[in-house]
Amino acid sequence: MRSKLCPSEYIALLTAKYDVEVEKFFNALLTAVKDGNAQCGDLSVECREKKNNKVVLLITRESRVVAQFQLPEEFFKETGHSLREVKKARLSEAQSNRKYDSPQALQIKDLRIGMKRVNLKAKVVEVSKPTFVVTRFGNYANVANAMVSDDTGKIKLCLWNDQIKTIAVGDMLQIENARIAAFRNEKQLRVGKTGFLRVTEPQLNPLQN
Image (cartoon, rainbow, N blue to C red; front, top):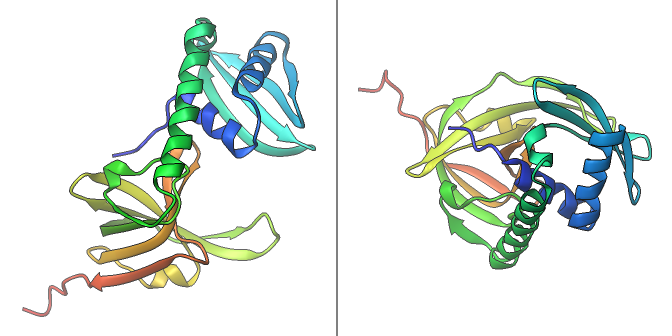
């Protein structure tokens, strides 16, 4: 089960992350789709491609890429409706952040982009092979994704370096003080330096019968 963001939710997330007015950012997207380029504060918007009734938009800040995403052209035809949906998504996100400002024991179905200090119990159902990457700070690191689940759904858990070795498929996890982010238009659970991840019930060893 993959938790994809709809266009209005993704645009709302960008406006919150880069602290820009919803209407100004939306109009900049419209202008870029029409003219090829637009500006919204210190964010530059470029329409990279129009193909198969979809547009690819690139967002940069001071020549640094901050987002690239694809949207259906139909989203920009009913501009009044689309803008209202983005504003509604931005308001919903703000309300969620206020509601979950303190640590909460949640289920996966409750998780929303932007939540912080999230507590969660889940089971590891899949772990990808680690990938060696260079971070934006120039450091080297190993990163892997684990798919975790509870009775209400599934979500990816991002694992870095030593975290990767601490879990295995079948483990029950206690995750504390995590946050919910978006990566490539998908919800992702992240446990940073202030978060906590531990195995409460290790996977069953089939040899121990």
